[in-house]
Length: 474
View 1: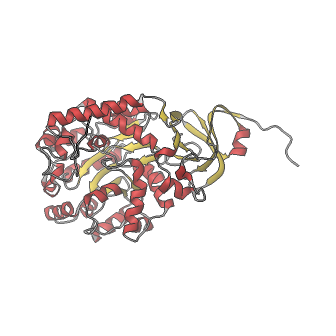
View 2 (view 1 turned 90 degrees about the vertical axis):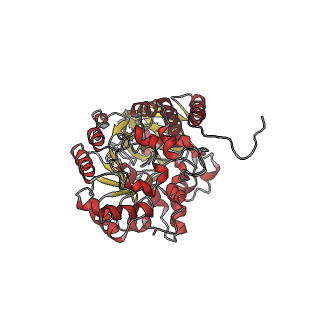
View 3 (view 1 turned 60 degrees about the vertical axis):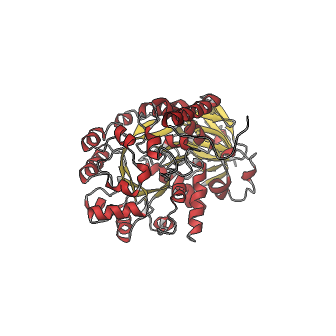
């Protein structure tokens, strides 16, 4: 007989009801008709809608109406201001068709430019179902960037600006170097050592949306002294150390010639390659580096759209699917949103893997954009899945979008077909920051206009002609 005693109801601030909840918990449970109860900034319970609706009295209810509910995606590597490069360069790697190169364009930003670009990029992320990104040390004003992130309502990790003390490897990547960039971020060991912990004050507040970590530019631009100091700083402050490595074959070869050993092997020998370390790109690693990668416990952030843009597919071996099978933790990053959005990353990863006839499953792709990316941020205990005690960073998608059908495989849909038009509601830290396809915190039109004006003014300052090849008639 059913228990006649009334169920004791608990208060909560918000209850998301009647959603197809993809939890990404350790069992990867999916509730066909599920609910998520939230109190303050935390998830207090996830389960069947029939159960939670009886147990909780909510101040506010969000009805998912059968749409997919999932943990917010995390972009594990995004040079956030590079969104403002769209339409400026046919290719950022081209150093001949413009009076300035990509490095000059990066160096030409003002604080207002960075604030405008960051706000736009954050708004775009919300539309794509992202609630956090990791910015790899390319903001000249982290204060302006952080304020923009907080204003829109996302999370971010930020690092000190361009930490490097060697320049030889730039010969293999000429578009990434310019006099103007090196004037703003000098290649100087003393500067870098002094600034290693410059953003770590942000970790003191556990409720902060913007936190600090350690990023050294890498790809051969850091001395052994800088690398070891950065690793020690990250370890002592319990934050991850990220660095670029294996970006293109030419850079990898230059590193071997300079140091007599390939980069990841050198990092291992220096005591810098371990569970604290996150290697970004890893496109061009040799066999010895693959062994070091697998044995070290370090993580990889792969940027598939950047891989496409480099045009190196015929000169490197695709190893990401194999690394996943071997237990290496791989997450996904955008690198720079030059020709797409963060929402394109999952599909780009899928197509790169398919082109090498070594596919990555939809399940693995979602892990790379959620739990693995949270681990790359050093926040696996806080983010990446919908579980009791974790931060309430939640995305609710609408069934009204055409790409929600056929609805027989929600994991495949979420990973590969449900684009930005399907995002209905986004919560960050328990707050609804996006509802009905619109920001709840900022004037979107103002943000869009500000970044367009910013790009036009920067182009004028730098002498860049933004006129296209085809005539525009007013």
